[in-house]
Length: 195
Length: 195
Image (cartoon, rainbow over all chains, first blue to last red; front, side, top):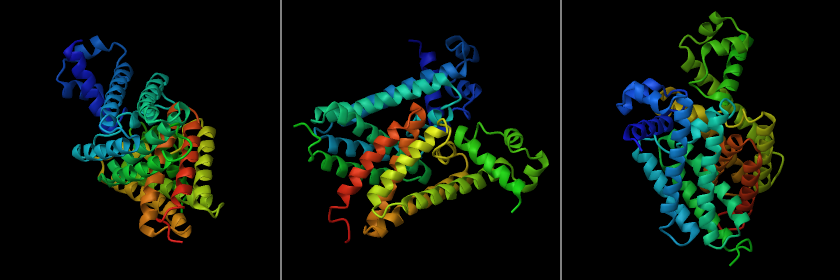
């Protein structure tokens, strides 16, 4: 894969995460990525929508990998997930609140305005949900219960990121981590778990 | 209060919710609200940022009122909150997924680009959190515990709205409602509750 193409996509991921789809212009992507203008149209002949679809898919895969890697650090789903959310709080703080939830702004901006971008956002959120669900299944939950819980987990993390970024503080995400850990520990003691 | 001014703010609320800050132009607001261009600058001499700050504050107060009204339908916080989230699922579906979370897109778009808009989003999320927290306190939780739980509740609702809008389905919010109801019922049986 071309490193110029990669560089364009990576720059686009960062800008979309920090400011959203509509605020991100092709000229800004060219300037920040240090690529010649011709290369952007060479690699992405359909322009901004095509490039954004690639960037969202890449961001989704990166987040999915981060979830799987983070959750592998603890055998117990409740601890693993709570600790993973705490690590997001730190990452959001380290980015000065410009990073976290790389799909969210684009997802909301394009719900009804771009079918292509809506579908890629939908697919990417599915990858995140499935990464959590697999951890829960490995921890003894039924697949159906795990999928529902994973939807809840993705929701609360997305919302916690919004509150942490808006409040310029990792605290909302840390509260979310504590509550989510409590909930999952309680859930693991009920009959909904297989083992 | 002038009805022209009101109409401009209401139109702005709808457009911000459906498409975000950067996609919403003053010309679109003028066209959709049916107001003469001069009136927009008459009422909002500082332009789009000033108008958006007013619109976000208005949306925040409307959501806060809806939360309080919705939660008043059940005495028990767990039932009241789960049913309120189910009503959001219906509202998001009825809007064809263009409505729900009127603060979110603007909040994320302006985290670091507009201090004025960041502060009004932060304040508005605080109103929503406090509306949930007061219901929890009335249900017997300590104020400190209620505030933390309310942060969790706002997070999961915000995230559930994102997933429901992106997936063009109320189901993620209905899953969230079920899980949240379970969690709050479990929490109300622990020593963290006063009564």
